Image (cartoon, rainbow, N blue to C red; front, side, top):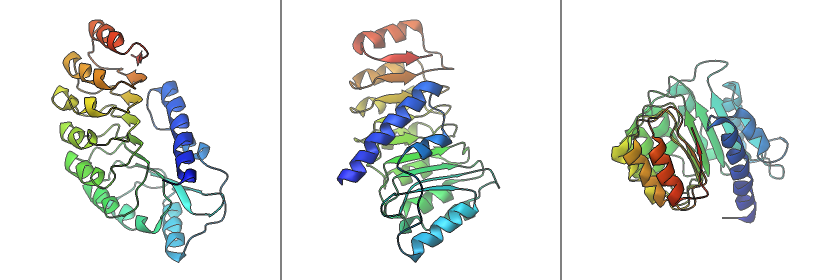
Length: 251
């Protein structure tokens, strides 16, 4: 990892943590604008310029590196129009060599979009895929196998479940994980305990009970845990607090 990329990771983590502490792990479009410097004219080759033009035509936002002009952060979401798999497939993400942060939000998107993203050789650090109920565990697992170096991952408000957790548990660099309002349960929670470096975790609205939540006691660096809209008991909270004294639990 280059120095510039490491610095961007550190800055992004700080902004993401601040925002998640404020609102409980929901996605903030403004966070993207807080990472990096002001937009400049696009650098890179013609293929990158074509990709950026397509993203902007979809109503997406592209944040560019202040020196090279390459795209570093991208958001694409329902807004000007409802996104389709064909829209995502039309963008050549492989032509964005400096892409570090990707946020995609679309109610009609399916595993087809994830298969397209998985084909890109680029390794990103921050991936947010939200409000996409048609996305399945199979599609997420395929994508995450190609993106094992993620620092932050948000999969809120989707139909993913325990199968995805098996892949997530192998991501050793992960620091921020948001699984709010998903189908994950106690069965897959054992994989959360494998995330030794995890600092932030949101399980709000997930189908998890006391026994599953106690698995995160193995995450020694965990500092913030969101469990709104769950059946987690006060006893479980106290047990976790005893094992992780510095942990802040948000209910």
